[in-house]
Length: 168
Image (cartoon, rainbow, N blue to C red; front, side, top):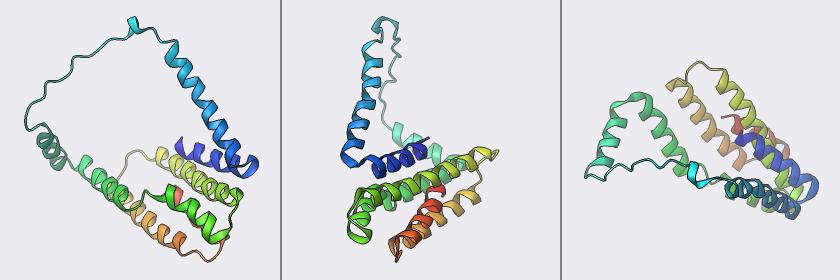
């Protein structure tokens, strides 16, 4: 779903411009504010908070370490989060400094990632279960494609690589 909205944002930026896109995004929050305003506080049920006890974080980390179904994805996300998820900062800089200084290029780059993310999401949804080997392959592809995008000599190659990066 996030990939769809990233792609939609890219198309919107390319078609109506950056400032209009920000105003449309700001307007989209009115639905959330409206939903919060009409909530009835009396219908909300508070849960009893768990008491803080020493060692809870250590116990949680120990559980993750003993559970391979959790350990693999968490380690991969930690590595990706540490090294790779600054793309939303560097991509606008690439659009401005490498390819051209217009919002349409910025929109195209974000649309390419969004299209790839939708394709990757559909592919992931079709899998019966996530396998560690597939996650490792996608992580390797993601990192390799980031290098390819960073060194892309032209916009076309960057867009193609960004579609595959979004899928990974």
